[in-house]
Length: 49
Image (cartoon, rainbow, N blue to C red; front, top):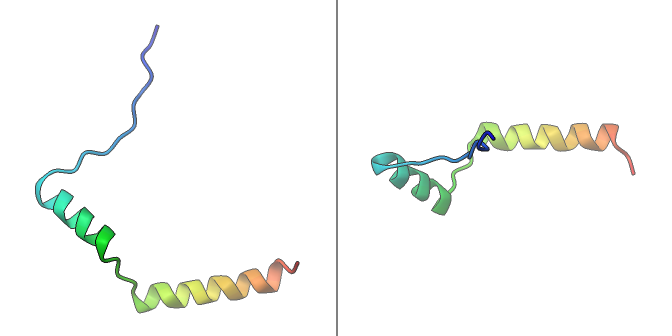
């Protein structure tokens, strides 16, 4: 019988350090903020409760 594929990501060295730094100190760009504002407006316009 075939063995199931195990999904996973292994980071080492500088990649691992950068990953954990980004997790501890997330950064949000102006473009991301604008995109979220636009998404909120689209949601309000199209999905009224």
